[in-house]
Image 1 (tube, rainbow, N blue to C red):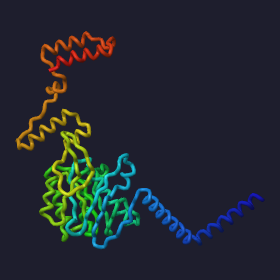
Image 2 (image 1 turned 90 degrees about the vertical axis):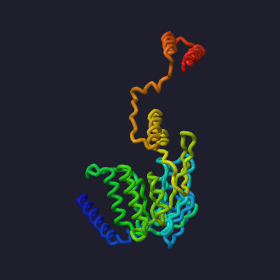
Image 3 (image 1 turned 60 degrees about the horizontal axis):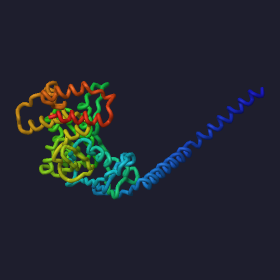
Length: 345
């Protein structure tokens, strides 16, 4: 009996507590919302102090001015100092920035950082920059990266075009649009034609005229700066020394003079023989030759080997056959190496 009474009392107390909580639910939700807001604002303040953020000014004229802007995530994971960059976009002469430069130079990081700075300013956060004056936007549209949708039967290019179509249909003059390498998923002429048409449509005030960052490897688009009002060219500075390149990560005015594609391929670890052949093909294409003959790599394998004349080759092979590396002292090994070197052409 005692146990049953305890169970009944527990049930009564629980139901009474539940009724009380239900009656106070509105106040509990208000309190939770206030605590959440304080938590967010404290987090904003802590991050701003720790990472040297600045309070942005809210512009009313549609301009977007950022001095020494930084990527809020990338700068926290780099071992070396992050290279800051300026940004100027408005609804007049600087509506669209066409950004050219090689892959891996930092175009995508730069555009993402601009979008993040605008978003951070609009949600009430300080921003990673030395100075920022930012007009409110109604939407931020991005078309970056490469992906497909196998379940829907859509290729990478189809997904890209679908996203571009969505942007063109829904962006307004108060939107911020980030477009990265539009048209790269199809043939050169098709891709360049699509990219140019998109630029023309977006920059014209009567069609759209929104603030846009447009990264591209089609250097032919840089001529649009002279043809369309509101288009401005920018590029990522690259330092070239011989066949080597160094990315300086700095955005400057003007179009890039080279895509440095082969240099980037070498930097990525493509074999020297392939890189050399790519340079040969590029030279032939730039000279206007109608046909580039394929390289026979099977017959050219000797180019990767040390070259001997007939007599020296036999002498070198005989020397190697008679040499036991397990019995050589360091000085004897050097002498053998020197003898072999004298046989090389």
